[in-house]
Each structure stands twice: as structure tokens, then as C-alpha cells.
Length: 324
Length: 305
Image (cartoon, rainbow over the protein chains, first blue to last red):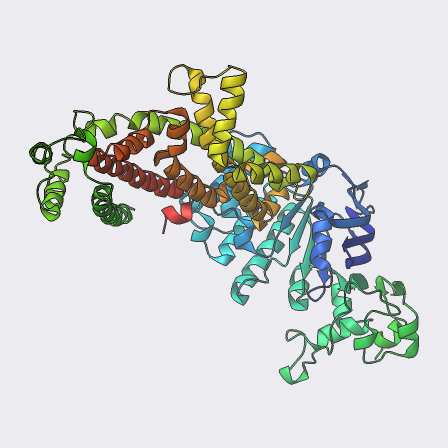
């Protein structure tokens, strides 16, 4: 077992670049064993690319720099063979689009059993039993009869449950969930979030939950990492960040989230757009959209720094923002 | 599925009927058989007797209704040139034709699927460029030219292979290579294009995130999804192969249906032309139904709808 003080996953200076497009501009992030961390950001903030980069799923011509240490071993630049051994029992992933995530020409039972026969060398009979158990575990009724059904015969929520069953089949120590509920109805969404929480409590696996939705993040995670323009801008305990955001972007996100304000008339959209990914950012990347930006913000890039116990922020005026 | 097949069969038979009507009248545009079979100084009485004997003395429309009513009983009349039933003349060439088509298509797929897959696995790499260049090259070579050059090099100059006919196993090599030439190039390109798409699909990336080998990703997860366009083009090309492979009969004197049809046209042997086209038409219809069945096997979304 890993000592509790040592992170399960530790990312340092991670950069992902596609040609001139800088999707991730250098992020640091760590996940302790059993911890649930949410990565929050609007579309284009680099949060999904981060998830794929951890798994080594960035294809050429994409370029990955920095380190992704899983259980103390760096994964960046490792061979496909080494990575394949870690994918599944080490790190597993659930994607946003559950229809596209399942192979349309094989039955779901076939696809769940494939993991067990290929990765664990089980015979088909034993794999079948376990596939039924997994489907029941993720809340699919009449699992035994539905084993032979194809992905298009399931609803979106059910497909996502099957994706989760496949992800937990090898009992991963870290589950990366990339917007797993974004494509689903709100009622179905709640069920999936409850399922993820229940599975985490049973197995003690760590969770890295990528989302653009603060309310969703709060339901599954204890720690929060806020990303903006390919960088981490704020990091800390999620409830504390909700109570007292220390970065203007986080504050703006809270004010623009229907789940976080008392009345719809208090909703405040964030004016403007994130910076172009091909251009070099001087100063603070959020400054052009920031209501309290000062000349210093446009000239000098802020560092991610400790602003209070257990909290880091990338803002020159973090303390003032937090104490408004 | 059964309903689909019966609809498919009905529309195919209507198309076949149209083809038969055209063939009946077009064949008669080649001229009178009497001019070919009787001596130049034949008397009018001799011509009349010849026409009466072969049923060519009656008005065209009467000939046509006779043809249709007989054809419905699978009676296609006598061959003038061969002195045997036209249906026998046509059918006896089909085993050679189908065997050549089956072997050629089998080898084509064995070659084109791995080539297209390897090209798609590394797009724009040296391997991809080599395979793409090769496939475009073989798809663009005129096949009659290829056949003649092969005969010149391997049969005439080197003396390794027979020039024509069908005897030993060696006599199959050049006809098979000629028939495969264009399909290999075209199907490799189709496989590459379809695999490029499915290799980048979410389910293949997801399968990769489960730690599978590239072989499993390519051949189990991506290829099966790329199957539909590959089956379509392979079925189309197989139709062309059954359709006579006239080049092969012309260059190698291959005793297939192509040879039978070409000879029948030269001999103004109307009955054999009609029987041959009918047999090929039936073969193509059966092939299309086979392709539909393979679709259903390959893709559950077609099977369960």
C-alpha cells in the first residue's frame, strides 16, 4: 500500500500542444489515494485534454511535456506497452459521449467480458458471471437478459452506466471521469453521480472528475481544481472555495451558475471569451474579462501561490478577492 | 429480413427482365445468322429454310413472345453454332467463371485488408505513402496491357507460365492476377479510408483506455465497424468478376462465361447470348442478396431494426 502522505497521481508542469495550439499550458495537480478531485473549467480550458494526457491517449501530432507520476512512476514518454498495463487496473476512464464510447457492433456483455478474458485471462463462463455482477452493480435491471443487447438498444443513462461498469471491471485505483453526465438529462445525471459516489465508497478508488458544472463538481468531489486557459487558477477544498473564492474567475463562475445563486436574477454571465490558444499570453490570462483587473495584471503574470491554509490562487489580489 | 429479401428479389427480377428485353433486340442488330452460316452463293430458298429451321422467319414480336414464354420454362432454345441447348452452353461455363471470381476476390481481400489497415494505422507515414502509391498505381494500370505484358514476360520470354487456356495450377496465376489488379487497388483505398475513420472513433479510443493491444484495436474494434463500405465495394467488384471478366477470356482464352458470350456475339448465336446474359444476371442477383446477408451479419444495427 502507498503511504497516505504520498500522492497517487502527481502532475507537474504538464503541457499539451497541438501544432501552435497550446491546449494545456503547464499545470500541477495531485490526487491522494481515495481522494475525489474535480477539475472545473469552461469548454476549451484544457480540462479534457488533461484527462487524456494522464492516460497517454494524446495522439501525434499532439505533444506532451512535463511529468505525470502515477504511484511514483512517470508515465510521460512511456511505451504503449507499459501504458497498456496501467490502463484498466491502474487508471480507468469514463468519457462524455456514451454512445460513441461503446462499440456498436458488439453486445455490451461481449464488451464487458472482453476486458476480463483479455486482461485477466479468465474463461468465458467466469467472465460472464462477473459481467452480470458488474451490470447489476451499476444498476442495470435484468442484467442477465440484457447481456446480449447492443449499445443502441440502451438509453443514454444506461449506456453511461455500462461504461462505468467497464471502467471499474479491473478495480482501478484511479478513475478519470471526463464530463460523464454532460450529455444526459438532469434526472439521469443525478443517478450517475450517486452511482459514482457509491462505487467510490465501496472500493476506495480515487476520482478525478472533469466537469464544467460547479454544482455537479460539488456532488462528487471534496477537492477542486479550477482551470482557465490551460492553467490552474485556483485549488483547494471544494466547500471552502464555494464559501470564499479567492480568484475572480472562480467568483465569476459561481455568480454564473444557476445552482449556486439564490435567484435567477442574480445570475451574472462572464463577458468575453477565453484567450486564443495559439497566442502567447502576457500577464494574467483572465485580465481582459476580469472586473477588477489593474494595469499590473496585464503586465505581470501571477504565480499560483498559497493564499490561505489549503488554498492556492493565481491572482495578484487573491486575499482581497477572498475577503470581499 | 424475409420481407426485405422478397422485395429485393422482386425488384432484381424486374431489372433482369429489362435487361433481357434489351439483349433480345440488340442481339438481332448484329445481323442475320444466315449470312454467316450459309455459303456466299446460297439461294433464297436455302436462306428461307435456314431461317425457318431456327425460328427466325417469324415477325420480331412473335419471336419475342416465343422467347419470353420459353424462357419462363428455362428453355432458351438451341445454339446454332454448338448444336446443343443454349442453356447448357451458358451454364457449363459458369463453374470456371465463379471459381475464378471466388479465388480472385478471396486473394484480393487477403491483400487489401491488411494493406489498407497498416496504411490507416500510421497516416502520412512512409508505410502509408508506399501503400497508397502502390494501390493507386495498380488501380490505374490498364488491365489488358498488364495481361499482355505478363504473357510476354512470364510466358513468352521466361517460359514459366502457359500463355492461355486452363490446365495445370500454373494456368490460373495470370488470369487471377489480372482479375485482381484493379480490385486490389480500389479496395485497399476503401479499407484505408474506412479504417482512418473508425480508428479515431470514440469506442476505439475507449478500448485503448482499457489497455488493449493495437492488433485488438485495429482488427477487432475498428475493422468490424469499417466493414460496411468494404463489403459494398467488394460486392460491386465481385459482380464485375462474375460478369465475365472479358479481358481474361480475350487474352488468356479462359473458358468462362465471358468467352462464351464473346463467341456467341461473333457467331450471331442469339440463343446463347440470351441464355448467357440471363445466367450472369441471376448470378449477380444472388451475389447482391449474399452481400445483403453479409451486411446483416456484420452490423447488428441492420439485423435488429
